[in-house]
Image 1 (cartoon, rainbow, N blue to C red):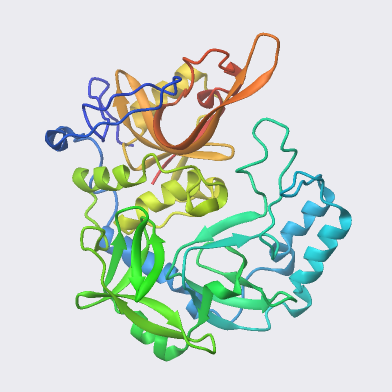
Image 2: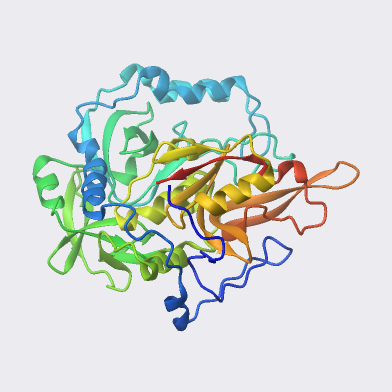
Length: 425
């Protein structure tokens, strides 16, 4: 495995990065034009064959249009029914009764699983729900780390222009159970349109662009969507393709203009300038559990960082440990873990994993390994044992021990203490 010299500060971003690791002030990043030439030479620009990776990504992207049914077993598709056995609170912070769950399960209509058997496309960024309802499901909102934004009915989210395969309608026909290339669940019927082979042939242009800016608007006569980094657009000459639907819910090809500053041909070259470009676009974005409110959680952050470069990684943190070579360091001490990461991790091609969370290693500053990640909070506990949270709530650059400088920092919940391993992609 490639080792990084101890004497070299391998921080990718910038030598003028001003960093206060989760103090009461927010992490600060300042970027100047001259800093581009000072980015690390130890990030491995050639850690992947980008043309090969992009071809594989596009193949996965369109995989739902190759299916003839949703591939999940009934047991996997209905995993969310187990929430009925848990104590769940609704949007009014009142405990969900059994009849509420019975209503959701009945409306899920799994007696008709795999009966639509149609290909479709998303017309906007859309939430993927565990049950076919917009109602949130919280654990006890009075407890630290529960309530908003941890809506357990939010399974994930997918972007505009995502190919999907449809299983069946909910009984009220407001929702459709679907499968994308990396996730399944319920989405609103109004957010999709059916595609046929003619549409698919026109949509698959073999020439694709990818969004490199965050939440810029696009228009199809009127406003259509705020586009997120890593959104894919087929290109036709100097136009970009999205879908609209006719009165029978069938998808039609629509050509739109997009400011060329917001998109680039896919894949972007995996070099320092482009890594900085994508990092800048993602940093400071609000945290969104499961993609809630059109934001990102930790694993969608790492996933979307790599998509512009043509690299596919899985949707959740545990699955991402299988996207490269995993090294278990769970039995090491904190000091040993830190040294192992400094010696072996490669900036911008290494993930740092702990249960329920994943981070992108970016290098070293002042002898401290740094990571980029989207995180909600830091756990605190005072001398009387009272627990609290210091909210970060956004994509940030931190050390492996974010919040260590905070009063009442809870050493038992030190991120570094809980790191289980690293993944070399």
